[in-house]
Length: 391
Ligand SMILES: *Cc1c(COP(=O)(O)O)cnc(C)c1O
Image (cartoon, rainbow, N blue to C red; front, top):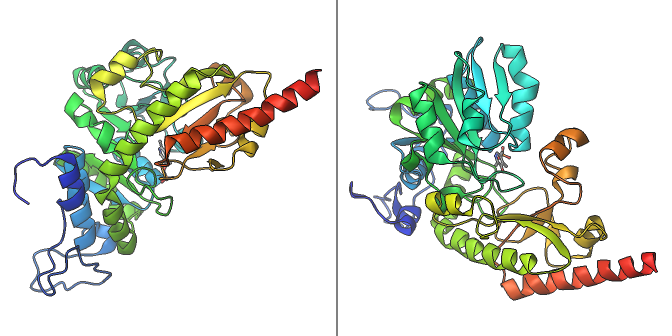
C-alpha cells in the first residue's frame, strides 16, 4: 500500500496484507514457523519478538486504524494493558487512573502495583480537573477509558492529552469500547492506545487478543518489556484476527445503528428507569461524545424500574443471551454487579453508580425489530410476576 492515507474500510481490508508471491492467493498467507534463519537475513524473526510476517502485517493494519506510527499485538487485552503500564512505570512512580475502569485493569492495579512500589490514585469524577487534582510530582502515567464500562461515561480526550503534555506525563487510553471505528484518541493528543482485540476487533466471540498503538518511540519501549514478558499471540490467531478486522468497519457501524435504535426504544419505554448511552441527547456528555467520536458505539446500559426483577428479566430473554464478554455480532448482556464488578465491594459499586439491577447491553447486528420483540416479551413476563406478587 502507498503512503497516502486510506479510508476506514480500505484499511480494514487491505493495509498490512502479505502478498502471496508464489501462488497469488487473494489473502495473506499464514506463516506458522516459530523458527527462522539467522544467517543472510535482515531481521531475526521469532514469535516472542513480535516480528513474524503475520504479526508485522497485522500490526501495520492496527497502527493505520489508530492513526499511529506503530503497533504491537498481544495474547490478550490484559497482556497489552499490563505490558504497556509496566513499560512506563517503575518503583517510586505514581499513576492517575480514571474512576470506573475495566474490572481486570482495576484488579491489576489494586492487587499488583503495591508489590512493585508503584503508587496510584483513582479520580473522583471524569472531568479534566478531577484528573489534575490527583497529579503528583512523581506521576508518570494518566490512564483513561472512554466510553467507560459499564456506565458509558465520557472523558475529554483533548483535555487529558493537553494535561498530560503540560505535566510531562504519558497518557494512555483503553479504547476497547469505542473500537478504532468510532474513536481515534491519537488525533486528540493521547499517547498510547490499548485494545482488547477480543472485543470489536475480533467481533465473533472466538478470539482472545490485545493490541497497543502509539508513536514508534513508545512502541519500542513497550516492545523491550514485551519480549521479556512474552505475551505474544499465536500466528494462527493473528491470521484469524486479520480476517476479522476486514469486516470491523461494517460490523461496528451496524452495531452503532442498532445500539442507537435500542437506546431510544429503552429510553421511551415506561418500564425502564434509566438508559446510559452517549448517543442519547439526555446523556450528560452527549456533546463531548459527538465532538470526539465518529459513532457512539454498540455498548449501552440500562436499569429496569425497581419494582421489576432484573435477573428474571435477563433469564426471560430468548434471543439476547447473558454472556460474560461483549462486542460480538450477537447481542448479549450481563449484570456488572454479578460479573465484571463483582470483586468490588457493594459500597464501592454504589459510590460509582453501579446499581445491582444495572444491565450492560452489547448490541449485535441482528435486526433491531427482533431484539425489541425479545425485550418486549421478557418485560411482559416480569410485569406479570410483579402483578402476581403485589396483588
Ligand atoms: C475485555 C476487556 C479488557 C481485557 O481484555 P482481555 O482480552 O479479556 O484480556 C480490557 N479492557 C476492556 C474495556 C475490556 O472490555
